[in-house]
Length: 525
Picture 1 (spheres, rainbow, N blue to C red):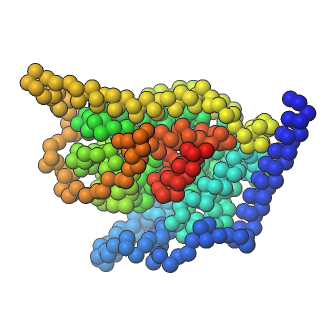
Picture 2: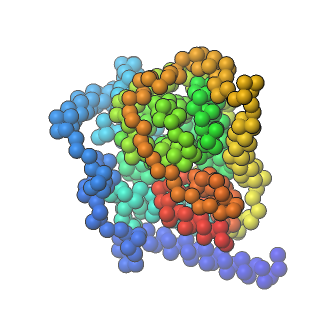
């Protein structure tokens, strides 16, 4: 390195240090910052009230509910709270262990959710064994973390319709920023990946700051959840989830699988948030919390079962849809706003799905490869390289990043190729058999596929308007969903790693208009 290059590096390092310190100071000041603009701190005029979980609801989305039904549900929760209090006080007894699974399926009362999650994650013991570690990691982050700019960016767009996160530099935004900054130093193999802000944001709704830090670490490091493999470079566990999900569909719902393949709906287009952030913003929040309760108890096999459950109970609707955009819009957006079934019905179906997959030996993922597990002990500080401190990444993808990008492109393109081949295949009688013998035999084996009059077909199909498409010579006929997924892997800013660039995969559909503009701008660069 020449002297001029060294001087330039030092100047860039000084700028990076100044920028990182400036961001920290803004969070230190919190609401006392005087330059909070209108977009950062939107007004409340369009909202009426917060729901019980703190999410602000526009008036047009408010639904009238029968007062007697509300009173009945409240009474049920009060009675369940009494039972859960007794269980909490006798947590280690055989009686509690015997009743735990059944009562988790019925739902943990929201007022006790924090206490029960803390027991599931063994946070009290973790806190006793790691006194002062969180503060230490936060100091390291202030000095060295290369992810601060990305964390700051994501904190301000996380749960923007939640009363505690809506205001810029609010108490919860401050806590979320510090948790993610500290964890980027505690687990330096992962550093920071955007999906972590969503998971940490939910945990912060129930825990304080330090508890959230250790709860996030438990989800990444405990073998029951092992989310480290989801966020580490290359996202190996995410790819394993996708492959296993496809295997389940092929075995248990071949008609749905063929239908999705026919319309180019690869599982990567709709299930990323299912596996990556445990269904947040893909199903109603009340139902999502019920799934989190079960996930805390059983671990990762709940995710595959819930993904299967969603497609199973909406099978009839999906088979009636004849367009990629209609299907992805339904799975990504419509179900979040209106799932179509009450929470108790969905959870009962989930329980049956878990039993069904267990009988078929499909409840668990195949064994994890070594690259999903941490190689460096957590909390072991390794000073970042000069380039990492500056905030630059290699302009060329690593071999693993290139492999992942090609995998996603191949998954999408191969579906189109298979569809073309099927379309060109003509039988002896002049037409293709849509449902072969193998398909029917698989359905009988699984015994969960029924005809149009099955138990889940009593709801009318929701009419959907296909998403607007831009017909460019290079993108004609390709849906925006596919383009967004592919672009998120191929049009990355060279100053951002693939891990932190997963933003468009995880939250792009929550901010369609803003992200469309952002992607177009990046593509032009």
